[in-house]
Amino acid sequence: MRAAGVLGPAAAKGSKMKMRKTKTKMKKTKKTAKHLPPRVDATAAAAAAAERVAAKQAAAEAARRARHLKALRRVPGAERELEELVFGHGLDVGEDELLQRLAGPQRLHDTERKSFQEGSSDSEVENEAKGKVFSKKPAWVDEDDEAEENVDMTHRYRKDFMKSDAEKVLTKKQLKRRLEEQFQRAMGGVPAWADLENRQKSKKTASDSESDEDDDLLCRTGNFISNSESLPRGILKMRTCLPANQERFADGRLATVQFHPSAQVVMTAGHDRSVSLFQVDGIRNPRIQSIYLESFPIYKACFSVDGEQVIATGTHHKMFFVYDMMSGNIIPIQRVRGVDERFLKSFELSPDGSFMLLTGTSGYLHLLSMKTKELISTMKVNGRCTACAFTPDSSKVYSYSKEGEVFIWDVRSRKCLHKFEDEGSLEGKCIAVSRNNQYVACGSASGVVNLYTTDVCLKENHPKPVKAIMNLVTSATCVTFNPTTEILAVASRETDEAVKLVHIPSYTVFSNFPVFRRKQIYLAQSMDFSPRSGFFSVANNKGKALLFRLKHYSDF
Image (cartoon, rainbow, N blue to C red; front, top):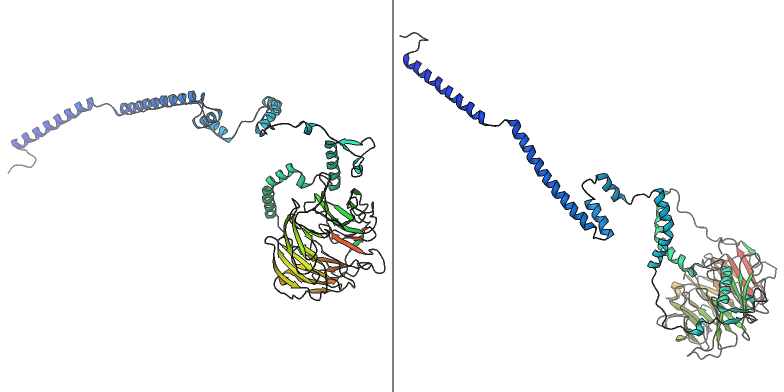
């Protein structure tokens, strides 16, 4: 047995061979390691390659921007600004500069601002001239039109326009300017419908104002709903003013008194052949103008709906007059073709200003156009028609016959829609429809005024009135509602002080009007309320237009 740890010859040879193999492997690895570059050199090479690529891209971007800048010199200003905002001036354009351009134009310095203000006036004139639409030149010019025509101011129609005796002759332009000045004094300035510039501006700002009101409503807190103050019954708070025509009483009976639909003006007309306009202030009521219609006692006069004309009919004439307040012309309508009437007295104007309804004899109703004053159609009722009234929407006409029957007509088709009998009426005298189209008042020769609702009148042939007003002992000759449908005025021209004011909806009479045991009204011929019920006027047979201030209503 060999001792442990002592190797034999074969084992020694094997170990020497293993030692040699390991030495040769180590030499080979050292040689391959000498040929490989270090890691630091590889990283630097990659960075250099990336820089070369970035330089190429920057050069390409600079060339592209140069091409765009070159093209900007040939494009218009608007496109140039857009290109500059998108692409910039060059490579050195920063983010702050781009944001400043997008935010808006830079503020001008003081020196630049002064120079800009100096040249702004010329530029604004040029811009306004460019913005205006050039009107076409006329095909020819008439020499007679260019020649100024003189107007004789000594005529009785134009005497009121003279400021001195030296103005006996004026040109048409001067007369037109004088009429405009007088009309503006009467209206208290230029009316809204006549100011075209403000009307266009108001249309543009209407939507803005509505949005502002909504914003104000949302910005405040509190009680937005309050109890409305309706007219109380019993006693009507009122004050007696000087007559509306204090500066010029009529000679004889005053046939008509009416308030202007938009201005603080009242009109009177009567048998003295004159139509007068007065400004209503409740204190002095100064006279504005008077016109005289020769040999033409006025039966009725009425403002047009737009307030620019006055239509007047006579007591015994086939013709009627139209007074144009804007031009100052008095236009006679000698005859309406198709209307064969001996006299033209009573008429009504539609609330929309489109129609004029003439009441003829033998039950004929003639519908005329307000623009042309020509006949549109004729309607016929059974018997004789004594009074007519349009509904507020101008779609229907109520005609009251002498036999006590009321016919309801459709204005478009001119057909009778319905007919009903006025309860207890022996002879019809007057009729009125409220502004809210809720009530119809029929006055008869017995002095009874029946008050109906329009719904019942359109359905039943024998409707029952909601109230029979029996405070008049003679025939009811005039009935009218106030604009708020809170007062019904009824009157009779056959006895003194025969005027009553009825409270609606209680249907009771105000006890303090007229004043007890004091003659003030005499024979009432016509009545009217101001547009917002602030004043009430009664025309009497003494030539006076009595004026009363209703204190419950704050506006005219």
